[in-house]
Amino acid sequence: MAERLAGLILAGGRSSRLGREKAVAVWRGAPLIAHVACRFAGWEGPAVSAKPSSGAAIWATANGLPVLPDPEGAPDGPLSGIREGLRWAAVRGADMLAIAPCDTPALPDDVFAQLAAPLRQDVSGAVAETADGLQPLVAIWRVAPALHALEDLMANGAHPPVRALITATGAVSVPFEDSSHFMNLNGPEDFDVVGGHE
Image (cartoon, rainbow, N blue to C red; front, side, top):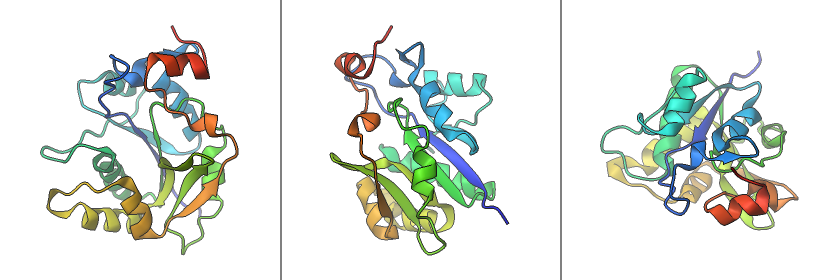
């Protein structure tokens, strides 16, 4: 029986360096989030982790994608979004959840196929790694073990580093040669490095 695959785009950041919401900032003719969404071909969703009134949420709704806001009182940070994504995936019966942040529009087209390759039944997750180090927000998680580990890590309102989830699950790293594909577009200067912006 084929495993059921779901996707999640993390779009809940503050975008303080850019001065406007990153997810819907235009790069090479389309919003950043649209470029990232294309990488999830063949995966259910992707759902979008975003505040309900944000540009990312509006874009997701317009494109028929689920919006997953953090629950009231959840700690700030990406693990809250990942936890909601894992909960959503679990409810839908998905076996694996692929994640990527909205500000990485140059990800390789086959990024998730490469990450999925080592995911045997005894491997709980796979995380991208480049010469710059681990890219912990570009990953695939087996839903059940990752959600169990994350619920434990975030008990009592804690929000540890994302790497704590990698350690807790024993996730493997998958090497990618070109670090530029994983560059986060945080400020106006980054748009000019990776490609023109409008």
